[in-house]
Amino acid sequence: MSDTPRLSVVMPVYNEEGAIAAAVDEVKQHVLSLISDSELVVVDDGSRDGTGRLLDEAAANDARIKVIHQPNGGHGAALLTGLKAASGEYIFMIDSDRQILLNNFTAAWTEVLAGRDAVFGVRRRRYDPVLRLYLSRLIRHSVNVLFRVQLSDANAPYKLFRRAVWNEARECVPDGTLAPSMFLAIVAKSRGFNILEIDVTHKERDTGEVTLRKFKLLKFCARGLGQMLMLIRRVR
Image 1 (cartoon, rainbow, N blue to C red):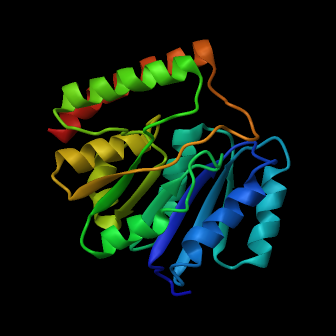
Image 2 (cartoon, rainbow, N blue to C red):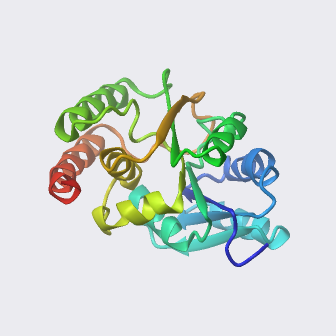
């Protein structure tokens, strides 16, 4: 693989011992096998189970896999670490919980090769707790009203984009941002990039743990809203 791969897959992970091996295998099967010059950057966000060990074993057996271990800082911090480490011409962000299937990645890759700047996944049907679904609808409405854009699922953990999109968005996504994926989508849409939204299949979580529950989830959303209001000034 060259020093600058064609595609970097960025995957944050926390306490996914039961799913991480399968998650890595799915990326290898549906993504890395399609693009020979590609890499998988996995950020272990201070997992307390055997996730880190399993990742190190996977990396030892496949040079395309790069593992970064860091103290627990949350999903947003792990995602930003992965984005900083990614060196590909294109970047694909996906979560490690295997809730979104990767079997349609070929369609997304074909679109960026044909000239799209980005392809964002949309979870039309989601298998999440009721509170999370309600807050997601509220966030979607807030994004579209505050930024005067139309994004169906701005925070979906399925985004393929040219490096130029991240370079443009980076100045608007400072360290400490709770939802870098959503902020990237907002900036890309606001700045007029050529974006396609495609439906992706979302399924119930098989293993692992949901780290944000009830009160913590509400606090997270309140902090995220404050950061979103600050983003308005940066985008405009």
